Image (cartoon, rainbow, N blue to C red; front, top):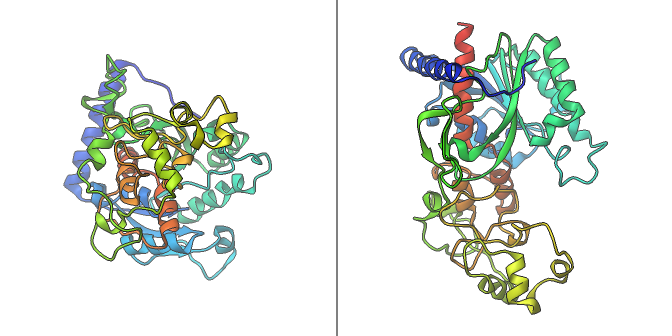
Length: 393
């Protein structure tokens, strides 16, 4: 097994040339690869692998436990996402798993999350097993598994590697920061790539396309493309949007269909106005307005510096989670308006295009947005998979 390691400068140049050559051949041949997406959610990962992001993959089958996620997926990629428990589906002899070149997806991550206080015996930590069973049944030659960074230090990671190797896969893995690949968000996720062949450092991790202008003084050739751009910011993503209107979903084209507000209490509005400057948070609220600061925050003197925080216009956002509409859950206040960000703003910070169709209730759509792999990050992974598939052609 090969773990994520930085390669030498010469290797970086070769990798860039190899990736560039593979991309050029893909465009000229126009070959399409069959894709299966498991635990697919809204389909952010599929979107990154699709023609919409100039990638040569076509989804042929997908699954998610949530009916709302299946509705969203089918609205965007065709009517082949099956809603239901993946274990039950595998035990149903009437369900046929199609052949595919690639299987992607993220088994539910709550079992590994630091936010889960009961993670020792969490059964969701074992859902990678049916994932790999579908890899086997589909005869895929590549799989891409996404999860929280904690997976890579877990017992389950070793078990995943052992089973995948017994199936003939070599593997590489690492943590990728979404902002390094053009997503206006400092979201970090773990990715495991398996391939029925040799995976070298020439293809994974993908070369970074963006850099942090506040800290990166030098950009190693081994990790970045020749001319990387500065990290994209909150302003880049949502600066053109008008103030939201109403509090409900609207039946109109994007972006305004999911660009709506909430009905905050009078006390909540006072709290928003008490911390009007970018970057402020619950500690500033306690200093400026202790009379309206929740007692639990008064008692908690450390940690949670992003709670009830305002975003910065000229930085990426922090990680967009499923309850981004609740400022007490994270740094989700608009940089200058006295409100939390909207569903549309969260979707843009996840790099979803405005014409992507979300289905379900407001809460279900928020969950779909927060749980998604940013499509733009997925597109960079798709380039790695193309390079691997070319080795087998």
